[in-house]
Figure 1 (cartoon, rainbow, N blue to C red):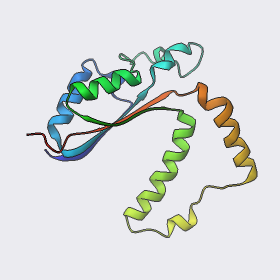
Figure 2: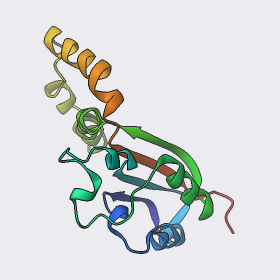
Figure 3: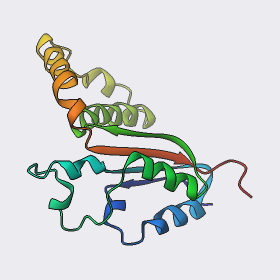
Figure 4: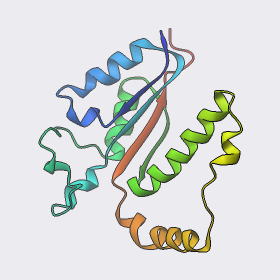
Amino acid sequence: DSFDAIISEHVIEHIVYPNKLFENSFKVLKKGGQLFIETPNWTRLFLPFSPLYFWNDYTHIHPYSPMALRRAFMDYGYEELYVKSVSSIEFGRRFLHTRIVDGAIKTGLPEITKIYKPKDSLLRKIFNAFLDLFVHPFSRDILIGVAKKPEHVG
């Protein structure tokens, strides 16, 4: 019961016994602590000519689908907060902005939020609309899962 959160970014697909990650994380999380997992979405299996194709990385062992990740959370006693497939293009852009701004606020540097603002130019809005319509529906290549250790665990 030592950790508030455990973050596993692109690790679980490389582990021979991924059940140990779920099991051991549960043991060391505090009650209410969260497990964050980011892994390639199993849909990468269907893009064999893409550089993102799951099996092009010889160290990948276990592909995960949203259902498989949900099942793992349930089997090891976690409460699922969410499991979602996202586009690495969209996720990276929004996540980076969130990390910069949130990190600045938490460390007492709110002035950075005045300096760093994503540009809302017309060109950016058009580009984002293009991504939303034509790219993201076909490129949900990242699977994000967040679950927590229940408060009532004995």
